[in-house]
Image (cartoon, rainbow, N blue to C red; front, side, top):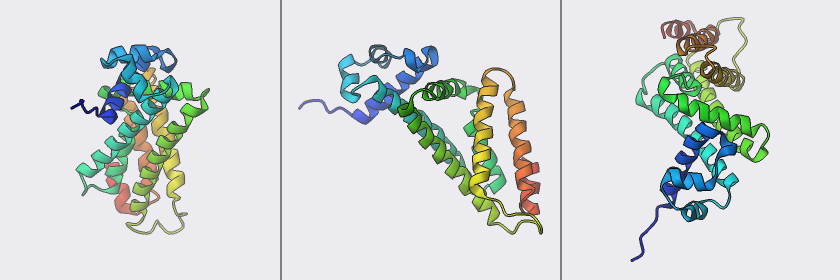
Length: 213
């Protein structure tokens, strides 16, 4: 019998090779031939999975975005009893890619973002990834607001607006860490300060939990 090929697994393997090369040379410096060599498959195998370099790059962008989103979801699922403040803090930290082991992923993400600024097809999957992360943050903020009414005289929170602000902050911190403007600890403090301010517009219990994170 002819050998069955797991094309989805091969596509993910190729995407990992694209990411490694994009980290070294930028997305524009990635070739299908080099990807084949890095993934240890034939050029024909790469071409059977992807009709063009652009299609291969688009899949790689989706792959990185899904990896970040799934890591956020996995961290939240690992501690289902955690408070809303703790859950949102963990999610923001994961999105900002603060940890040392995520430096390469952060460089790859920003390299794709820079290329997407002049490449609309590449920008679309990035927008989809940002939208998924924003909706996840908005869900966490919504859950927090459902714990009780805000203080009297305080305007109710708009979860989508708050999520958009938090996502922009976390995403922006990634670049600040990579160029050495901020350390990971300083970036984490920036996020913490923002979250404390956010929880101050929620019930007292949420504010106390945020300050203790």
